[in-house]
Amino acid sequence: MGVKNIPDHHFNPVLAQTYGVDVAVFLHNIYFWLKHNKAYEKNFYEGRYWTFNSLAAFCEAHPYWSRRQIERIISACKKNSLLLTGCFNQDKRDRTSWYSLSDKAMAYFAECATETAGCISPNGEMQNTERGQSFHQTGTPLPDINPDNSLTDDPPKAPQGAAGSGKPKRGRAAKAAPDWKPERFEGFWRMYPVKKSKQAAIRAWDSLHPDDRLLVVMGHALQRQLASPEWQRKIREEDGQGIPYPASWINGRRWEDEEKLPALGATEAIRPERFGWD
Image 1 (cartoon, helix red, strand yellow):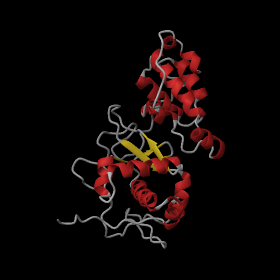
Image 2 (cartoon, one colour):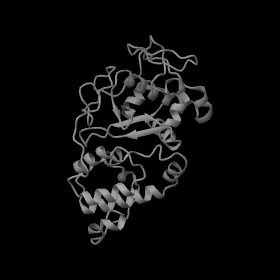
Image 3 (cartoon, one colour):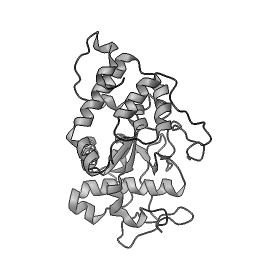
Image 4 (spheres, helix red, strand yellow):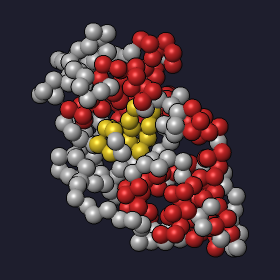
């Protein structure tokens, strides 16, 4: 059986020593594409660059990992506050996952963590670092998901606020409040621990149009997430780093992350204020 030609995979030895080789290899792949997108000013949302992929594409890029292994690696990255997830797809039915590195993870790639770092040449080609962390310039980068496996990082559907160049759309008039249930949105905004990108959150809220019953579900899930040890640690020790921005929480329907929610009675469905939405 022939061996498929894939590029060399590299990793940060300090990351590997701390979190294991699998996590280090996976994060290096994400880091490579973040640098690529930064060089071409693509996929910039919520103050950072993002890349996207499916589990199937990760399996293809890493044939030595099974789907279950990749799921565990991603879970470990998120548990250790190394990986951020978002949802920036225009079509809400598109559940393509978007990834970025947390500030904690970027610290391991310090030479490329700032705007002035010399890891990206003017033409966008990757430079090798002294520690050998980058992919070889002659190698083919691991592809992001796309139908024909071409080496582009353009989403299958145009992301929210994206122009043809991948830059966030500008010139949109700011809104003080959403058109849909503005008083409920203000309750959500007060309750949410990360006060970032309010305009994006307003747009996401108007797009979702949550009714009272859904607001109960959202509020209950958010209360549980706020009380979870993971969120409490991120709020207490990391100033909220790793908690999704409000718009990402809404667009990604993160209330559905809750494994078990109690059944709603008829009275609960019309009392969203019970969960802090008044």
